[in-house]
Length: 240
Length: 240
DNA sequence: CGCGGGTTTGATCCCAGTCAAGTCCCGTGG
DNA sequence: CCACGGGACTTGACTGGGATCAAACCCGCG
Image (cartoon, rainbow over all chains, first blue to last red; front, side, top):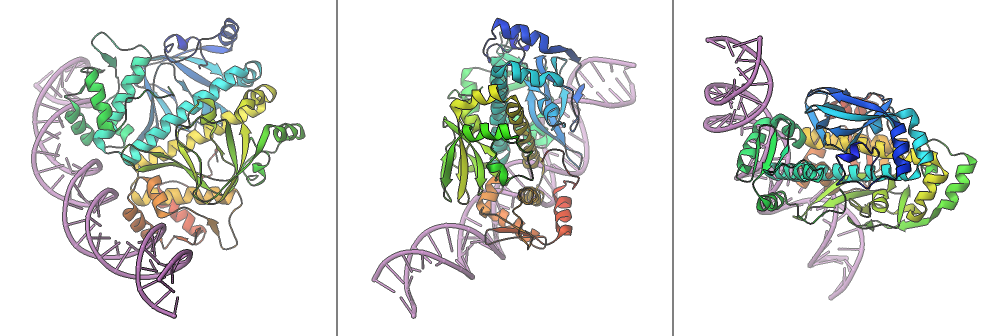
């Protein structure tokens, strides 16, 4: 399931293929691409958007800023993801979208969204599917923040990120995946302080390492180890 | 935005009205109603559903059960809400849906979902809208669990529940709304222990009371007070 | 060489979890 | 009629995980 055949190239492991007719339609539907440099902001929380996007390359994060000034990261954004749909449909994005590395995104006009639904009911169905998957992840995040302790949260997050990046084909020979986020990003994602985030990472160092913008896992056993720690089993999930 | 004109009767304050043609279509699309008694389970996490539902009356909750056995409530479910869509689209629900009071729901066949998208693009758009609103709530929940302390979480949750139930017209003369949940439900929703939930409620008692299945707020000032405590302002949100 | 962003480590404190009792209330059965 | 039990709620005492404060360290850069 996907919206952009272009971004789908990178995310092919995740999504079903397009028919030629759909491809032509999508090429037409797409408005262009957007380049975003590390740290760049695609939209702010509350913005009303004229476009939504799919991620072609690079990684980012969506976060909310609370009244007292601190940040809660809502999710990481990876190649193949769709962002900003809420901002076009409801007139206000629910979070700020920022690039953690240089990114390239495909842009789609809001105005043509009804056309998409009318002309391609399958695409509308795909969007329902994507929304459902998104909801699944947010639900897991809620469970993690609500009920797991620091080391469980950390291994859960790193495991999910790793699996996701492997799925989109970004694992290198050494078994590492790109990880442009800072420890403070992880802290804000997991609801931990920066200091405790660091100490927790130290405890996990025998299993997983974070260095030079890469996340590397020692071996397959390490993955199982992380799953064990996080309290998440390795049985392949039906979604994603 | 809504899917069921029947449930919309209860939730009319929230949703836009149907056209007569849509009404005829929806009546046909709906398969029937479901009665659920207090404690009853509509579906379990992981179930593949043949139907999804809208809530006509009563309240419930969606929760996940973790490996270690404890529960994380993902969201409360109120009249006008749609539940189980993910279970029909992706083949696996993301959480268990349980009734906190007796409930009546409207049921819609999965098999007819593509028809809905094809025949009524507006309805498809409505579903995107609903998904976006849902995502908004889940994001707020994540921010709350990640970054707020016990008393902030509690007043945030009670305020949201209260506002929501007022919006669907369930406030009585005394300014109270039905609240069939137990303190342990609140605990599981907010990621707190039952004991601390109770103590936090005690601290909030000058402002808000929970008794006999009702949630009552002293006055308008109390609402502002809760908003202040929770760190959430009272400015009306664009999304409900 | 100084500076700033990111990371690391140690010391201390406090919010919330855990354990333990006890109350209130209602339904059931002797 | 009262004893019993179980579910929801309450309250107190103790403990610990993670927040906070503080200080380095490392490294690339002007």
